[in-house]
Image (tube, rainbow over all chains, first blue to last red; front, side, top):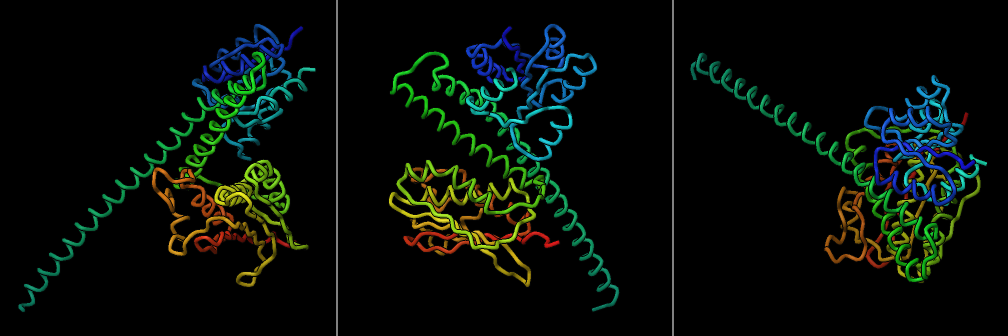
Amino acid sequence: MRPHILIVDDSADVTGALRVLFEETGNDVSVANTIRDAVAVADARAVDVMLLDLTLPDGDGLSVLSTMRSRATEPRVTAALTGRAEPEIAARCTAAGCQAVLVKPVPIAELLRRVREWTT
Amino acid sequence: MHPVDSTTTAEHRVLQLEEALNEAAQINAELQSRDALKTQFLANISHDLRTPLTAIITHAEILRDGILGPLSDKQRDSVASIISGGRQLLEAVGEILTYARGAANQLTVSPSEFHITAVVAQVAALNEPLVAKKGLSLSVDVTPGVPSLVADREQVTHVVSNLLGNAIAFTPAGGRVWVTVSTTSEIGAQHVQVEVGDTGIGIAPEHHDLVFREFAQVDPSPSRRHHGTGLGLTIARRLVELNGGRIWLESRLGEGSRFYFILPAGDPR
């Protein structure tokens, strides 16, 4: 079965680019623009990798993780996508359960390599 | 003068002064609130610029790497230019955001212990392709026994990266760029000193203060050959000072530049 990647970001331009990248490289892709939508996607189908923006219109992106955990739908791997690489942001992401913190825009070669590692 | 008159005059003056003081306080409060608005505006605009840039760069990389099908050499060159332009823009936006946060005193220091040599080696390696492309030579020289630092590693990396980036940008083909790390003493305390030097165009002594001033460009003309936000060295100075250090330069027009910064050596526990 193809890996299921969930992209959570409120920018349609960003999710559009990442959708093309992962669909063209053999993954099933779901997109959510809000925390609510992200939780609904994970309810419907197990997520292998979630790429999570931290600033979402309905709240702090990291709260998605605790909500999913309480519903037993937490993705196998979650990578936070942030605008800036600051130690306090990275520490907050790790504490919330993210396995990686990546700074946008992540070079696609690196993004593909990481996601391949997580899904094989 | 009659004593009563003199008291009345003094009271009147005190009243006038109090009024003037109140007015000054009001103006000051107004200016501070406008400054906070400006800072917030810069932060918002930076975020709003980063998002579409992220999309542009990601789409362009997808094309460049042939994920949507093979490109001709010319098409690939063209897409590579979109990516490099996008990355430059992103760097400028990042600088504006860092400046805005610095101006609002929102920059915090997260200190850790590290060796500056590791940072210098990392930044030098990242710049190697650019150095080769411009036909320059880059050397790194470290005096043995340089102590470690306790500072914000990311901020120090930013400073080294900015200084080396400038040295490369302002040095014509065939020139030399170097980084020297040594130990120095200031007010009786051991410091680590980093020198970033080049054989480039240099800076006239009367412009030495200007280069650290925000938004300042030594050559402000629209046709200037070197572009940037004019914030790089302002930010570098702010970051060095936040970490307890000092930054300065030695340069003359046509004789290259040497930028120095020092940071206190780590606590020798």
